[in-house]
Image (cartoon, rainbow, N blue to C red):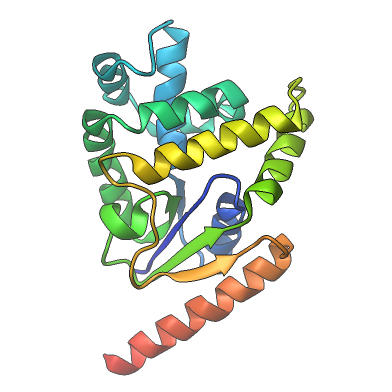
Length: 212
């Protein structure tokens, strides 16, 4: 059983990278951010407030794997609401077991606190980051591709606000695990980021194997 934890900033490329790595190592993949997006969608669909902990916690208790395949989870409004939903401790507690149960069987998990909170004993930990301007450009292109009418400046502002919330929330703030390997994708294509990640993962797993 191998667990690869991938944390990092929003729109840094960690999701795409995680999917590629799950194929490379034949491991199941969980995009943990989709859990919070699914909660946000339930809250928004019910016209509840993402800042209301009670409504968000009730939504979190309804999450199942089928909900994570909804393409609507990729939308900008749901992404923004997910960042607000994620600050509520009861929501994080409700989703904790789901994530740990998944990891216990082996897999690639990407999110904000996989290596620090969800599965600190992961075999390999990566932390993916990129400059805010680069991440905003990627996200803007993605949203335009979905047909959303939004300016780059708005995306950049929202991204910086999300970074601040993620890094400063009281529970499980976004930060690299002490033993995480940093990969900066600012000037890397997904292919180059993938190659760099495989190099790190193979080296770490090989080192662990020699110690057994």
